[in-house]
Amino acid sequence: MAYRRHRPARNWGARLHEITWFGMRAVVLENELLRVTVLADKGGDVAEFCYKPRDMDFVWLAPDGIRNPRDVAGGASDDVAAFLDHYEGGWQEVLPNGGEPSTYRGAALAQHGEVAGLPWDVDIAADDPSEVAVRLTVRARRMPLRVVKTFRLASGDAELRVDEELANESEIELEVMWGHHIVFGAPFLRPGHRIRLPDGAAAGPELTVVPERGAPSDIHYFSGFQDGRYDIIDPDAGLGLRVRWDAAVLPDLWLWRELGATREAPWWGRAYVVGLEPFAGRPTEGLAEAVRNESALTLRPHETRPLWLRAAVIEGEEAR
Image 1 (cartoon, rainbow, N blue to C red):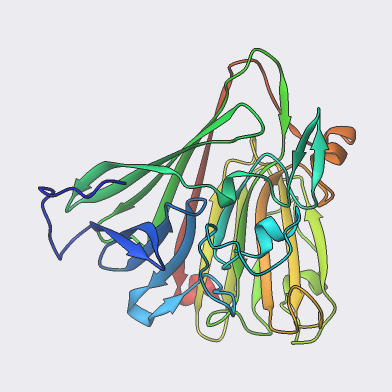
Image 2 (cartoon, helix red, strand yellow):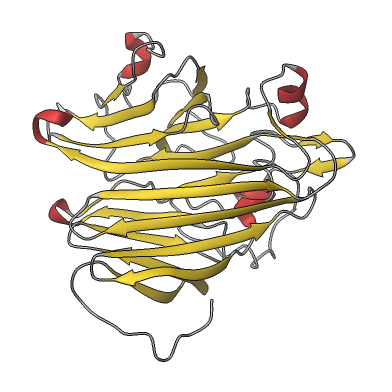
């Protein structure tokens, strides 16, 4: 991301800022309602999703904050630490491996794959008071994959739009796990919050109400989505986030709950979070297992697969 000396600036409507945040390149997309910060130097992570009227950031920021992946000294490295040592919370792109480290056709893949720890190229796709957009691009290093992801924010709209293309840049068919690791925590998340799923993917009541702190950690998987959508709401405050996506590409939803019961590494009792993660591939045992159970996404030679996601704030009766 190069400094653009002659790019017009403004402080109204839709606008964007190119900044350095914790030593990393970042882009802030902003309008009258939302401020969204994307870490270009770390996976294209969404590290801030703040709803301005309530000063409410929906993403969880881990206790140790934002860490630059280039700062690697001080600890033993392994294929799990590659992700967790620099995990700030927020929202990550997961590709080509989901969950535990795995080996696929000779390629050793770390926890949650490659792209969440890589720097991405950034281009400004739109810069107008009515709409701003940034386009991020990355290539994986251990598989011939290219991702182009565009974040878009319109003036007066409390919805972030994300449009992507995943390309197989090889002559052979490839299988991947592809997902969005979206995690909720403080200041938004509290016991009693509700999770709403569409018909056909509904879960039992014990999974749609956020438990008290200290409840056991667990992970669950939902499928059967005709309409890729969930709401996570605070019914008392009448506030929530609605996430929608193309379920034809990401047919599963992972529900991860770390509620403070883990007293050892990596959480040390400090995490009270719920992850609601649209995914292609399950369970969290890595790509080799997803290939074995035929839940992985298949890309034909030189195929490009589009994907869209939306994240919108909901309020009032819609969020009760």
